[in-house]
Image 1 (cartoon, rainbow over the protein chains, first blue to last red):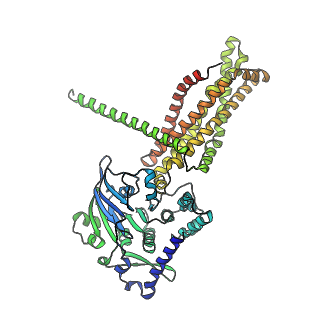
Image 2 (image 1 turned 60 degrees about the vertical axis):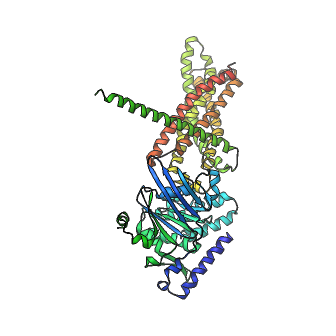
Image 3 (image 1 turned 180 degrees about the horizontal axis):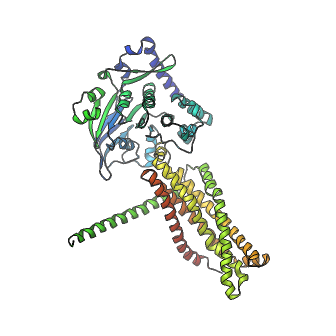
Length: 301
Length: 270
């Protein structure tokens, strides 16, 4: 708890410094978005998976600490399957999957639990527990751990709900929330145990543009203020580029988003495009936008 | 037309083989889930609060239908047996027949069938909905074993509550038989209860209490299995719910036959 707060406020201070010196448009996007890329904390190596038909065919990629990977692709291209494989919800037919230094491809449910506890996942529809209140949903993992007192858990839950802007919904049931609110609660639930990696599975699908922007701003806020490594799976190009080119800092106690217009200066965010189970493209936002591949051009148009 | 026949036969054989394989796979998965449930019941973490909630939902909330079923079954048993016994001038033995039938057979089976219809289907629907809305995946991602959190409390609650509900059903059924015997068949209150007391042995009670334990396990484990293997969205939830009632009821009735054969050897009628 203390460690999380310390890192949280350190991040705020870091963001406050340049913001106080210069207005947002004058800041170098690359400077703001640059993150230390070290040894990959997540890697796929030649992963194959088939059910009735091949779902993934030789997928390989790496993700460094603090960076963001945006996985694009049409329906049925295997995007969500990648997230499920990372969490051990599915097992690959062949290939290796390393998450935080552990090969999760062949682990049992009990063996993979420590890895799962360090990864947060936001499901497509939120997947909140119907029978629990919003507060109980967000505090679920903390109660399961049994390390914090009830007062500490409530304090943490309120802090997380404040972070996603839903403090007043503490006692509501998930059925009383809108689609966008449910997904924000899901983000708060995933963030509560202080994960090192956040996975977002189509978090804006079915939402109106304004609510979708609120969700993407939240994803940016989590990434920029806490340095959490993120993977965003989506087929909504607008939201994908919003996450890639937006950054967040704090000014006068308010979270202020700023947009980088020049894609060539972006760092720390990579795109990966899947097509029928294989990697069609991997690279930066700039490379994606300037690709001449007919399929990518059609996808982007 | 003739050359098509071998292809049709081959196609039919393939479909039959596939269905057989799927059936064997389903049995294997059911046995695995049941075994994990049993093992998890004796190893931590324990979700005691969830067990209590399930006991309330399965036991207390099923009380009304179990009481009604037991009462009317006892009453109709008294009427039917009196009609048969009158042919031999044996109407005073109505109490014996009602009591033994209820305790040994009808109480456990009817209670289990009613609970399967009310609770087994509810388990399948609830867990099935959790599967299609990814709540089960969310549980796993949050580090919780769905078998411990969802299956064990339901099975444990059924193991305790189905025998208790059966005792209540037996008691109410015998009481229902008493009402018919006194007000309709004109037997005396004392004679009826003396007849019940003479007929009932320890072996009857033992047999009547062993069966509901197994029935409780069957109805809850089948309900959980059908729920957790739901696929195909909300339509799939409906299919799982129906299947849980059909499979649970058939398993209860068929296992009752085999259990009765074994229990009659272990606890013979005295």
